[in-house]
Length: 323
Image (cartoon, rainbow, N blue to C red; front, side):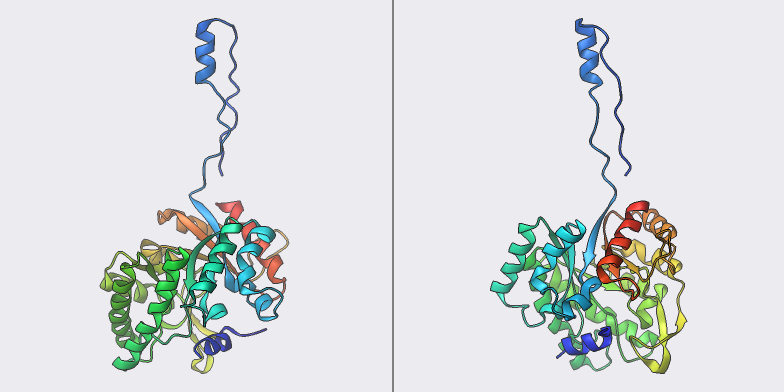
């Protein structure tokens, strides 16, 4: 299994519905005909406040194993899972951000399958919260090409990370500066810049909400993830080492919802009833609903026991149960 850390390092070099009314006309007179028109059955269900999308990382091992190509992702989302919206990972096409021909092929593949392109998840382009000003500015500028690529693909956002190398306050201030600059650039292309709780300080809901409040731009928001709330890992590792300190995931999602422009439904494993074994999905979805969010919720399966395809299907089924 390829680790996210290794992958990112390589990239830097990623209903409710109405039933029939059941009313019928009783006579052939004019009044009954009028009543019949009024009582025409409504068969179209009420649309859910949420729709389901598919995060490409859910199939990362399948792509690493060359079982599908990045360009096949939209087709797989539709034909294998009947999901009509996708969230890309930049590492799977890391050298194609400015390749118009390639991006146009991505558009064609998505259009051919009736799939919307929503987000590009950006990794491996430098930390937006580093203390060195020149290095930080370079990281900001590295993201510009992905803003442009997202706009070309018809996405609404890019997802970025809020990592840095200082203490909590210094890293916070550095990210505020970087995000303000990046979001200002992205606003010209009508693209949002979203920060995910993705480990370290960014997994502290209060820390990240202060970043959002200080940036204070309408196109800078959050992407709450149900499962990424590890504050510290063993040996100071960023990704795959065991977590030694974790933020309350339900509190964290609740804190991030006021700024949310996307939501990630992380999943790892399921019991015999189809419930996620580490996350109370009913509670999470209620938090999202209470936050007034209306939009896509992205399936992001990261488990090991089920295959990636089985995990995506199980996560989608669980979401459908509650939304």
